[in-house]
Image 1 (cartoon, rainbow, N blue to C red):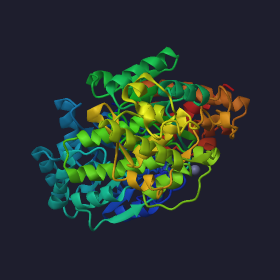
Image 2: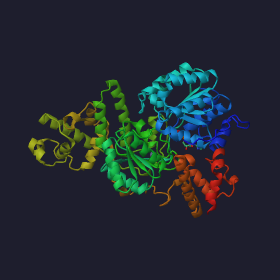
Image 3: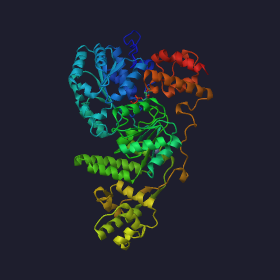
Length: 633
Ligand code: ADP
Ligand code: ZN
């Protein structure tokens, strides 16, 4: 941990005006979206619930009030965060900006802990990060009591507030006990923040954290720089490899898989193909997990292949793609995971391969879970919403935002907008499939799997067909005009919409449901995307290629040749500083900041002023070095 001199927080001239802090400390010229309203509300002592997408800029919403209130003599702000593994970097980033921050967690030894506690009790620390389980200890609470008595307990920020809700995807029981903050320190303002957008989780947060009186700040959840693509799963790992090779060579990315085994296999496969991939799942040793996470954060262009154990709060800004080889449980999960792409606002991809097996697996997991029936119903509803997003042939973003209650118009930046899929009317095929299933069941008294049903419909005289005499069924051969791919698509959609069920207990055989009736009677239409192997194959618009081959970062794409050289040199310098400080490179300067420096070709410190991301402290610490690096060109 670097031990930098504390900012003279109460020195004359250190303004507690939010705009001054934004400028001086963080080097940004303007608040983004609702940040200013939120900051002013909290500085004035109001409670707030902030719902903002990933990358929206939630951190400043509590960091600036904490600094402002410290400068006004109000003491310590406590940040509750579930992410022990990230506290070091979060605090390091604040140190880099000249803010007095610290964390208390199990990675500190006894001496370090006491040192932080002493500084906290003296009211010197502006932002103290702690995990929820720490907040609930008698020791910590008595320290807060002491601060409170002396008027030095300024603010509580509850990050990742959805962890309090069982409807969210990261439920942490310890979050439930955080009501103690409100009950014990009713006069201390609280700000709770989350990137989870659904109404159920939001209501749960309000209730569980007793935030009924808090003002709610709800941002748009659109992430316009993320391009959503959902492809039909064929050979998923090969499809993934093609996608990375074609569009994300050398980029940092995350690939989500359902199981640990699959994570391992995919990481090996990618590595074999020359991609810098690492596995991450809960079955790996804690030390290995930490090492892989560090490499992902610190090295450039690492692809993390992971289960959902990886990712919450990973604030690496330049993740260029998030891939899903298996479908998540619901739209909340999909949105949260894909949201880890492109926090820096530069173009990024959310890519998912989706197929029949995903539908079957997710349905089975709900059915087999030990949860109560009511809970399962909620889970099924959420799964259905994701399935209809996956099956959609219209704008993905409109559907995604619509799920979170936001109206929008076709985005022009999803697969369906860029290459409107051909659709075909599968109603007739669906009826034929369902009636075949019905007749086979009638004749044989047992159910069969998808392959056999399709063989009958397409009139194939297989061994099995002959064995059961299924060539005598009246639907035999009446679907010869449909390809197997088409029929699979129909089956997938029937299962996705609940008009057909897969019996996992009985060898994945197909069973009619209540929902089958409407389709059989011709009352429900079945519209399907035409199955195609690639957009190019159907003459669609070309995919976005990387801005320029070899240009490592979208931030630098617009630079001239000399600018590129300065940018590369600055990156090399930044990597060294980051290593020395044991911090990720982006904590020193973002790519966008380096690109802006490279473009300006600065000769004096004044030239560096006003570049976004260079605050007072960084100018002081790095200004001269940056000039030296640039002067070489
Ligand atoms: P979130 O926690 O909401 O995902 P962060 O707080 O990590 O988002 O912010 C995302 C990125 O945007 C960070 O790199 C941050 O420095 C940057 N950022 C936030 N607010 C501003 C602003 N007002 N001007 C410029 N950049 C900002
Ligand atoms: Zn769209």
